[in-house]
Image (tube, rainbow, N blue to C red; front, side, top):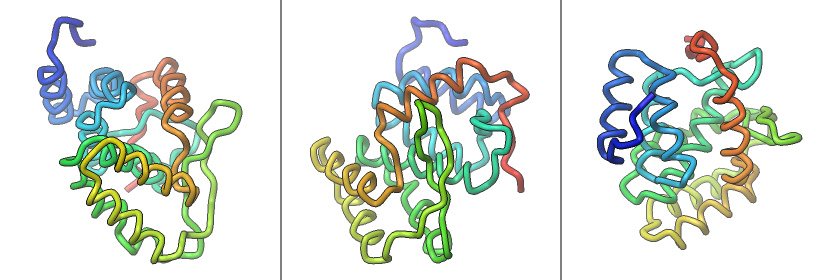
Length: 183
């Protein structure tokens, strides 16, 4: 765990260093408290590290690649909405190959827990509109409008619900439950 006396910048650096050392639990312990508070840079860093292979803490007994990507989508959208420089993750989450299929996996909430649902992908025009919104968001208010679009499309839950559920996951997971991506 980190020392409470570390600055925000030192915590972000510590998380990046932990990633290089494959110390999953330390990364989550450092990044999630910042991300939970809506720190867009921490959310964007977390999404970026997840894209590169940061292990997800297991939220169920069967963490599949689609479930991992569903969490990346949630974290990347909130990161881009709150941190204008955090949109580097958007090309990954808006890759047409992820959406041009019969169904897609998204994070949903049930009784305060994270679950995964399959939905029909939103129309390409709606995805383009959301992507453009996030790329152009230059204020918190503009980012909030993009988040509302993503929620309306069924791509993400509210951040309040998601962060409470993720807190519960992180409070109970063991280092070995920080599961690797399946590929």
